[in-house]
Image 1: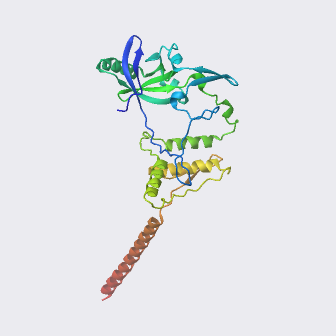
Image 2 (image 1 turned 60 degrees about the horizontal axis):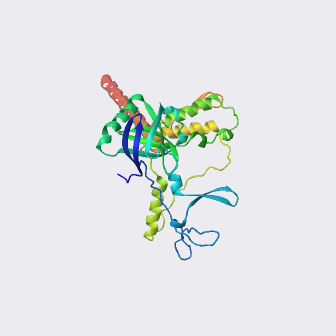
Image 3 (image 1 turned 90 degrees about the vertical axis):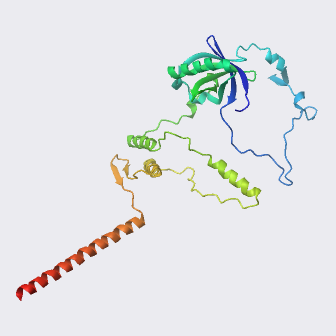
Length: 321
């Protein structure tokens, strides 16, 4: 179990549940340092006062807010600690809502809530069961790093998960980003829906970070003085190239079916709405085998005819004698 990031309690009505907060995720990204290319000397970031040019330690650095140009108001940690913050040591549940009512764009980091002592076991299990049977999620307020935050509590397997959420006014409107109205053919929509069905999965746990794996191979090769592994080349789409949308959809559906090992017969939809069937062509070896089998069958038939002719001639000869 990783080190707790925060300790406190869940406030569930008049029920208090002592908990520890631990991170629910891990970052497996590979990090790089900055180096001087000439001599590989490490480049480090220094905090320098822009007035006297002195390099400062963390103890000499404080917080401040710029209220106007050339005027900054200093704020101390003690002043921030004295701010009225009811949720300073509690995750206070304020409502229960349907999970579908929460826009995923509001969800940020995720944390597991672990019981803090045996006394918390029963109320923790009670809240978990209540969330499971109600099919709802809990909206809560909590404070972290001198700031009140909004959170979402839900059940994952046997644990309660806390998702930190952004406040409603922190979400930008996508209105200006939406494309202008455009006409879509019903056949194109139907084919796009068929593509979503072809690519549907019940479990996405098998996905892997192939970029990180390739980066690890590169670093391993360079550390051993070997040549970096050759990259697998992929054709890049020309930027700005106009594509045939229906042809792209048909090809995508076919590729998705072949990946799953399904019958790759595709009933292509033409822009006029008429289906055009294109069957999967058998491999060259399979075609060759079929031709050979056809030649063997024809040879057997010919041999059978010759044998029958010889038998008939022999019988006529015996009858004449």
